[in-house]
Image (cartoon, rainbow, N blue to C red):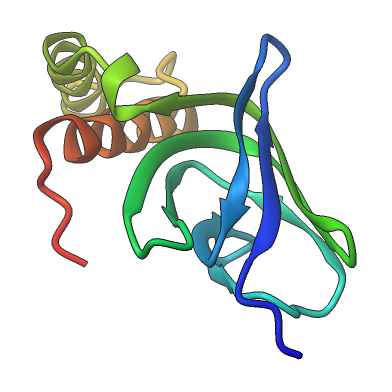
Length: 139
């Protein structure tokens, strides 16, 4: 008999954000996207900055912002350990928009003291939060 779901946990240093059964997930990992379905081979990988898409067994999709960490897929389920994670209801769209503006300004007016990678990461985090908060995700 084929399983149609797996156990999913999304854990930050502060809390367990998600503990549920899932039919599939897609998340930023390594140098691209990683999709997990029931029966996936065991693996350990890095998780980047981006959007975790969780589809539950009722085919309802939930979007979660994730920020740097690891994913472990085992026979028992999927565990995602990240520095931070935020569900849609946790994201302040105005704050994310302000952070996006600050990062864009930092990149546009950089000098030799500007940490370019840090500014780029801040921009990506803000853009992902905004996509989730305002429902602008198209795929």
